[in-house]
Image 1: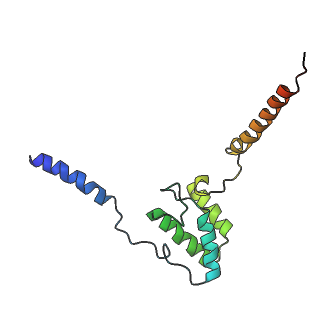
Image 2: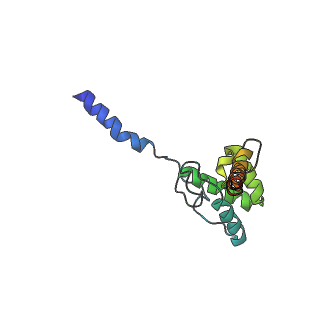
Image 3: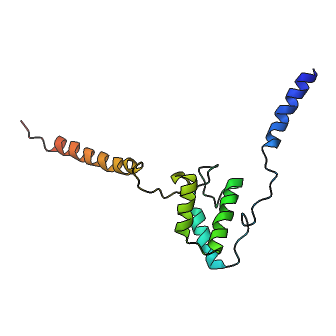
Length: 135
């Protein structure tokens, strides 16, 4: 009986241990004092994907990693770094997935070329179908 209670306690306590005890980053949910800088930061945050939520931008996500990324973006904007330099740093650190605007690279070019190839193939097939000579 004691073992069952112990195992049940572990299952109940497991979700509690998943919560972070760290305080949020200083600029995770606090806007910059300079409104022009904050506008740049918000525009950049809208184009960056939350690595945990995957379907939300870091501006919309409540995940802790999104808060950390918002903090990094605001700190770097406040330091005078350009938004594209921050995007490049985040892509270098987390990969192309972090950006909603993927780059064309040696690895991703088929994703951009495939739709064009399919449209070309459809055009050729339709042209052959409708330009056949009647017997």
